[in-house]
Amino acid sequence: MTSPKHVLLFGDSLTEGYTIKGWLFHPYGKKLQTLCDAANLDVQVTIEGRSGDRVDSSSWEKRLRNQLEKMHSNEIAYRAVVILGGINDVFTSITTAQDIFDRLCTTYRLCEEFGVGHVIGCSLMEMDTGSDDGEDEIKRVAVNELLRSSPSSPFAGTKVPTAATRFTFLDLSDQFPLHRLSPEDKKLYWDDGLHCTTAGYDRMGELVFEVLRPLLGE
Image 1 (cartoon, one colour):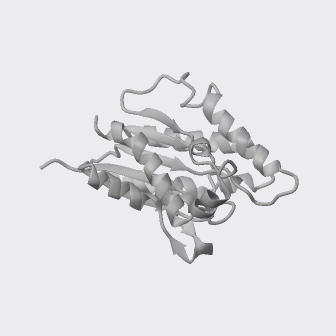
Image 2 (cartoon, rainbow, N blue to C red; image 1 turned 180 degrees about the horizontal axis):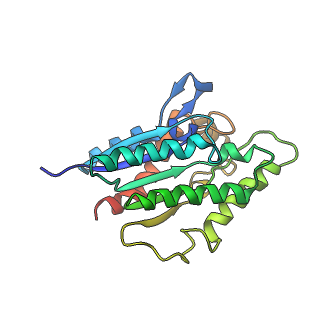
């Protein structure tokens, strides 16, 4: 009997599935697990999301390291880790886009150190906080551009991958937008200017599944 392929979903409230002001949690990992089961993929999804966590906090790296070390102690490596974080850091005035990008890269490298097969890094999703100055949005866009094209980004094609780890960029901000949706779809998918409805998180699960499925079949 073969062992299941382990997938870790790591992040903040968007991974935890925060919705209805915290009265309900509906992580996208539930939909992802359902899709994997329906496709007869022997996959075990682990969800590690914490609302309010920031990539520049000590708890962020500690949480990830704990998950990776737990698996390592059992001589198991995650087949894939999906990283979705940084949006809370955008609202910290002293934190720059470069700071957020650097911390995300540290997160990806930690996965690489533990021999994770595939690291899927997600862009910072669109938001609508009603801010007048738009500085938060400028910072969010700048982080995404760094992830896409900075020479130090593992997704830019300039980094030579190790034998164990491959990097994939999932541009959720483009594939699952907020501002380009019709009013009806906004109501369907988005709970507020930051978090999704249950239908929205299910849509995220579908998008992640589309990226993971060919990787899990290797």
